[in-house]
Length: 108
Image (tube, rainbow, N blue to C red; front, side):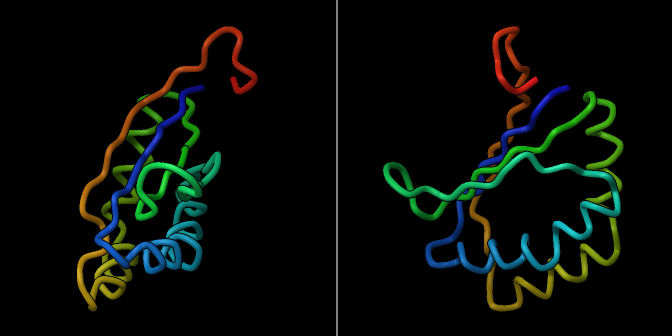
C-alpha cells in the first residue's frame, strides 16, 4: 500500500469552492473509479489557511496511474470542474508526493 499526499494552494478566498467541489462532485466520481481517500484536512493553526491537504490510498503506482488517468479524463469530471471555475480559477498550485509507510507506522 502507498499513499499520495496532495496539497492544494487555493487562490485567496477560493478554499470554500474547492471544499464544496470535493464534497459534492469529486468524491462521488472517485467512487466510480475506486479511488479511496484516507483523509482531508485544512489548516487550523500554522501555515496557510488557504490550503487543502489530503491523502489517497493506492495499491501500487500502477493502480494510481490507471485510476487517476481514467478519472482525470472523465467527461463528467471535466464538465463539472469547468462549471465550478466559472467564477474564476480555484487552485493556484498542487504539490503531490507518494508516501511509503515505514515498518513501524500505524498506517500500512
